Structure formats: structure tokens, C-alpha cells
Length: 232
Image (cartoon, rainbow, N blue to C red; front, top):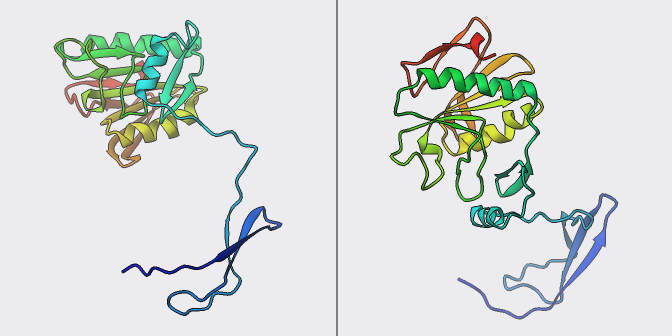
């Protein structure tokens, strides 16, 4: 039940040494339950007036920007959780490993599986990353009428050197959250393959770190097994 009453309340704002507002509440009359409040204070965060606010965007705005040629030709940007991020430039080692992955995997996948190289993947309404390589479920028009979504992905691979921390954290959480079933991170800094499976919330329940001498079998295509050494 709501109790209706009229009451004048005075709020006093005081800055403390810790950088927060101290809000003092001084009612001029007793509350409806007759409890007396006198000089009760609560702390609330002090706003940071020097920090610019972010303008988050969604896929509709993002695609309209592309149609309007907002970004200069050759720009490499991704939409991640509503933020437009510049992608790290691709170096020789990075691009060479992508070429190796493409050549190897396109030879051994079934005819109806679709390889995708640095193409968009739609994840919800706020993200459209461009993974280095994906294997996608069959689609009659080869995804010419829409971008693939997480449910279409059989395997997603990112190749990482300077982008390693981002791919191990933000990208991993994004792919897990949307249910990408298998995420490979080809870690060029540590010369290993990180394999993530069984998405669970914003993480993966299974992680394996493989090196030259190990082999890996695709969870969604169990007839395919490769030697890690050939992609390192």
C-alpha cells in the first residue's frame, strides 16, 4: 500500500575529501511511520565531468554508416558491443598464417561446408566482428542474403599477435556469450593454439593449449583432425 503525504525535505550536497557527494536528508516533518530522521547521510559517486560520454551504436546505424561511406576507403573497423573499434593492422606474419589456415582447411572440409575469411559475423544487435577465419554450416545462397550468426558457425579462428589480449578477453567473452561452439585462438606470440569449447555464459567451460606435436579434432566436424604444427 502506498501512503500519501506531503512533506518538505531539504537535500544538502557536500563534497568530501574522497571525491564523493555527501547527501544530507533533513525532513521538516516526521515521516508517515513516525520514525524520526535527522541528518542521515548517504554517499553517491561523484560524476566525472572531465570524461566524455560514449555514444553507442547498433547494427542499423552501423550499416547506414557503411552505406554512407562514413569511413575512409580501406578502413578496418569492427562493431563490438555497440562500440566502433579500429582493428589492429595486419602484419606479414599474421596474414601468412591466415593464408596457411585457408589453404589447409579448405582442402579437408566437406564440400557443403562454407569457408569465410575476414567476413562479418552478426552477434545480436550490437556486435559485428570480422573473424580471421570461420567454417560455416551449409547455406543455399552462401550467405548472400544475410550475414551468418553464431548458430551458423562450426569453427571460428582468430590469429593473434599484437591483438592477443583483446582476443583472449573481449573477443572470447563475446563469442562465448553468443554461443559460438568452438573458438580457436592461434597465439603467434607464444607459438601455441588455444582451443575453447562449450560456451557457458561469458566464458568457455573447456580450454586446451596445444603445441607443435599435438593434434586437434574439430568438435563440430569430428572426422577432421589436423596436426597443430602445420598451422603454427
